[in-house]
Image 1 (cartoon, helix red, strand yellow):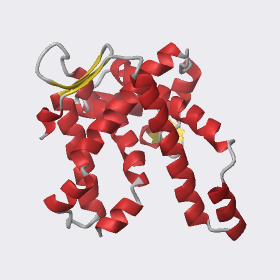
Image 2: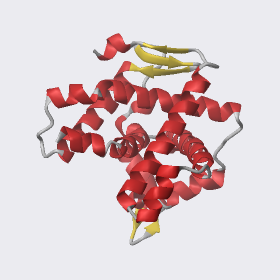
Image 3: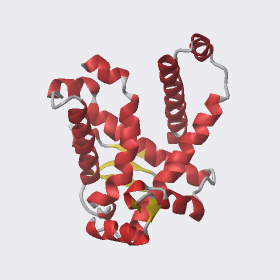
Image 4: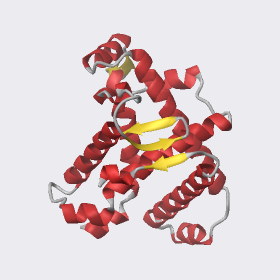
Length: 220
């Protein structure tokens, strides 16, 4: 089972992005960054301990559901789940700050398109503003806060896509071999690994230009 989870590690990264988007629905965006402890500080951005634990709990719940409740503490430790969640959060913050330095931004149209094409705000396949406002009201989130957080995460996604595009154009013998064999599963894994490595390499290089402080004691 653990081997299968590692083999499908890419689902963690996809799911984690979904968790980040959903933070505003759980009050994450309202955490006072002037109070409490921080698991990490990346430049001017701080990650409150409360925000981290909520993300961690949602990721752990995802693994439990994926393994039909058979996700043990031992499996969690072997996967280094706590560290993985924190690393993913730090990675996103580094990408967000990097976007500012590189003048990568989300236009109002891109933000609007992301909202109006979100199925949760649709009825019969059509975006409805009343549904949008009511959904945010129920979750106790203002449209301003939701759109601010969504815009940030769209920036992060755009940064990742730019990095992916750069490595996708580069040749790779293993990928060429998978294409020749018409092995779609192997191709998907190779492309994912290549893209993930490129993002991590970019993040590590950008960290050298920023003040990054991580407090792992708070997640132990």
